[in-house]
Length: 133
Image (cartoon, rainbow, N blue to C red; front, side, top):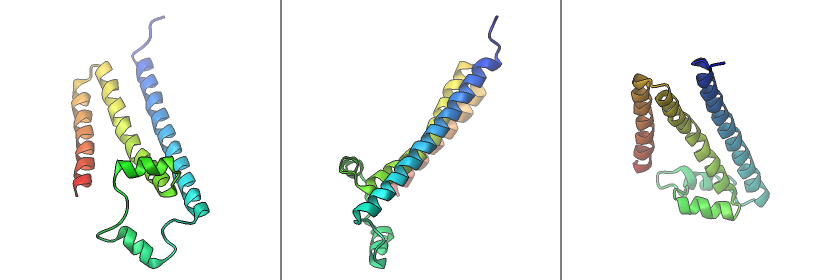
């Protein structure tokens, strides 16, 4: 029996669905674990109003480097675990768009490859510009 054109598309849709579910679930687990670590260790932000202002103010002290995140993950720092969960949450739809490009390429649908590639380019550009700003 020959596979129909809809069978590969259904497989790709299932893969995309799996990516979204796993990404969101793993992100939720990381954010929850980071929150619990912050509360259990008691060294998190938010105990005093001045700490919150220092965190989110114009010259905010919120960590912005990969070294901080990796070091914090190794130390099981709650803030670093939360940031890792948020980064995973941001990366999940970007990965979904990338997988869609592969799917459209396999289907030889050039119009959707171009459109989806433009969407991926805009997503990546927004991440770069957000980092610069």
